[in-house]
Length: 140
Ligand code: ZN
Image 1 (cartoon, helix red, strand yellow):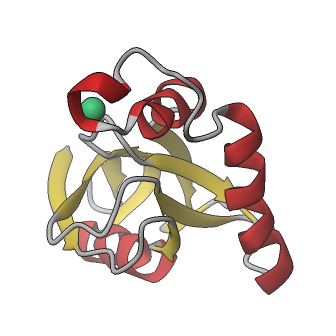
Image 2 (cartoon, rainbow, N blue to C red):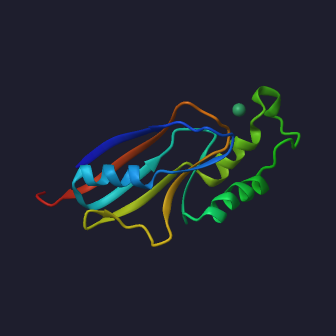
C-alpha cells in the first residue's frame, strides 16, 4: 500500500533549522506500515532536507556549513531577479528529498539522526513536506 501525507509548517527566520522528526513519526504510526519505505520530499527550490544530529551546536553549524557552500552577496547572476541565489544553490547541492526504511513499524533512523528542514530563504508562511509511505501492513 501507499499512503500520502503532507506536513505544513512556517518558518520565522531567514535561516532556520526545523526539526520535523516527531511529525514524520506520527504519520508512519498512522499508516500502520510494518515494513517499507518513508519517502520525504520538500517541494521547494530554496530550503534543504537533511538527516542528522539534534544538538544545539551542530544545528548552528549546519547553517555555517551551508554558508560555505554558497555565500550571500557573491555576485551571483540570479541575484538580479530576487536576490536569493545562495538559497537556490544550497537547495540544489544538498537536496530536498530523503528516503528512510521502515522496520517493525518504526523509522529505522540511526541514534544520531533526526529529520530537519533547513530554511535558507525565510521567513515563509507555508513550507511543505510530502511524506509517502510505501510498504506492507501487518495484515497484508
Ligand atoms: Zn530566486
